[in-house]
Length: 550
Image 1 (cartoon, rainbow, N blue to C red):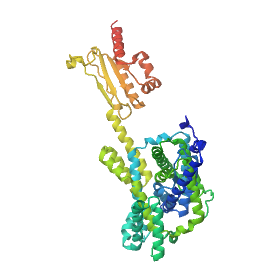
Image 2: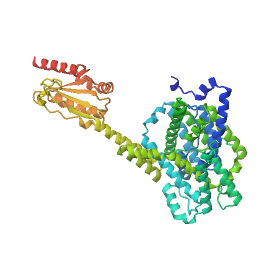
Image 3: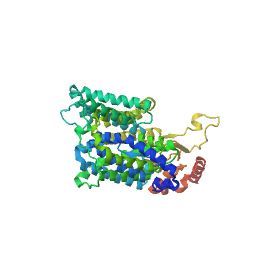
Image 4: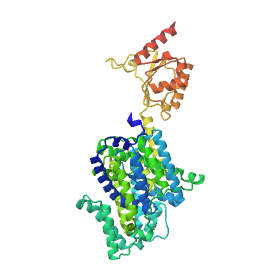
């Protein structure tokens, strides 16, 4: 099947590509580039790197992921989800550490795609993705309060809670001119879409606030005041990577890889729904890996599919990977020709743009819906993931969130698993034919649900009950079984053998039956004692009873 082959979507799209298709892709690519320009700069600054590195990422990773990806319309580049992770890596291990982590993440993503792990992302619970996404949004807001209010920090905190503490302690240094420029930018971002539907609001906010600061000579920091702007094109640079560096950044690399996979495939799914197509998830992972590794080699930061930019691409007519490639090439022209003007952008405007990004990615309506409608256990997973993302970091949040979700899932499965003896006619006095007649020498136990280590203790110990000397274990409702449950069943069979009770297994499904065969229990019990249904089991019980009397 085409879905299983690692073939870039560009190859399929170009088979029937026309001039009209190119015009649509060209238009969409230019518009998306205009949208991506201020976002790429803002996200680079939020990540603790220089402004041009955001554009390097959008250019290199954006081009390669579109060219090699499994989605027709995916637009890739720096995203808000990586901002706090990247900032933390840079603070701890410097730019060399970031490059090493991003390259390793790229290799992990390629391996995930080659091993056909694209479908594995569905095993990440929705509550975890919602929790850490909302948590990342909060960390972005906290990280931008300094620039929005023009605060003067006494030191440079790295962790989110330290930043919040520093904001509180230094709030008396607020620059009201900066706060005013930030509010102006927010007003433009909110009102512009209503007045100018075809113009990217972030671009309007940049132009308006830069003009206001420059013309009124306001005492507000701009990008040029804090950073050295470079219009140099991205160059291939091999980072100096040592074993110690790899060891230090390997956990961060796994975090980047998992987050890039989740976000890019979620974006691809949203895009599929908008255009009525299907993406190749494994090819998309390979492309994400190549794009991230190349981004690091050319001075960029981690990248992934950006849902907002992808949606803008679709709404403006983009229908093939060519649009994403055009978007990257337009950004390359902007970098070469217009990058020096970026030094005029006020820092409060950058903060305001990131506030809007954080608001849009927070999904607070979804979080509120989950809290209102979901079981308490799901709400607990979401809350724990959210709080750990804000208080510590995404690595801790995902590990703890997944562990908690797995434990809760196992508890639910254990609660569903039931081992119960049948009610017999002679015990209930049933005279309406509602119960199946069972001979007096037979016991029937019904096992329901998955039999795994969390439910293995429900398999009973055997006691001889009067003249009942045949035990039927009915397993039609057992979809799966693990070694712990098998050991409990082996213990039950041993107890039955010691008490001279024959054991018959009825309607054993494929997976449990394969476990029985591999363990040797199938041979020990005898293949003739594994029967397809309860009627056959009762017939076999009658045979055993007749044989015992001979």
